[in-house]
Image 1 (cartoon, rainbow, N blue to C red):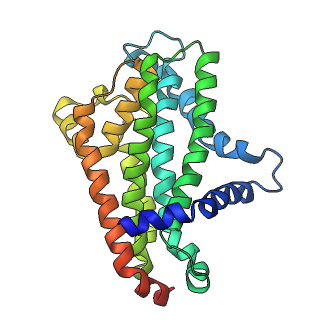
Image 2: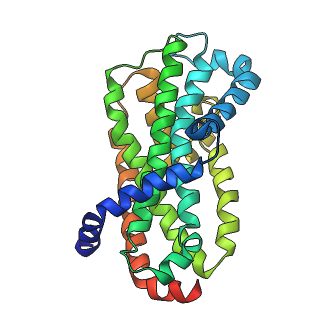
Length: 264
């Protein structure tokens, strides 16, 4: 582990330039450029808000704003989009970079770091856009917004850990790449992004605790929507899960690297 961290530090300039180049290449020859990374999730918010705002507006106690549902939805989408994007990009990370792994000598740990950096950059742009819209709608987050960087780091670690474990396995069993998008759709609707958990019957609500993204999205809502401190005791199991997944991912990555190159 120490060797991997030292390699990341030695190649930090390569990693940073790769993150910026990846960001530029994704939007090259595009008139709106990086705005497309913001437009897509915001359009999803707009569609849900338009369709469900009248249904959900009266079910959002604690938000004194006529646009309460849109505000609630944007906060949850900010969390979910970070998790889902890092999961999806990590899932095909090694397959997409197969030629690079075979032909160029560099610390392979750089690839997950570059992926995480690119996803984080996209999410920060979305965050700026969401905060701007909050101000336009007359919603001003409280001082508890300062907890958001920790929540972002935890969400990124959870998604990266799970994505890398599945990404390594996907090299050897390609069905995983087909199954995970379906799983993400299921987890999305099992997470209170477009609804509040309180609308679920109480005897079913206990099952939400099995979903770590439920805890993460609720923490985002606490900070961005309700202006209160997140439940750190509730987040502790999620943090432990993220650490376990990252550790497992690093072990699998280190052990399976030679075989992955052969499979690719």
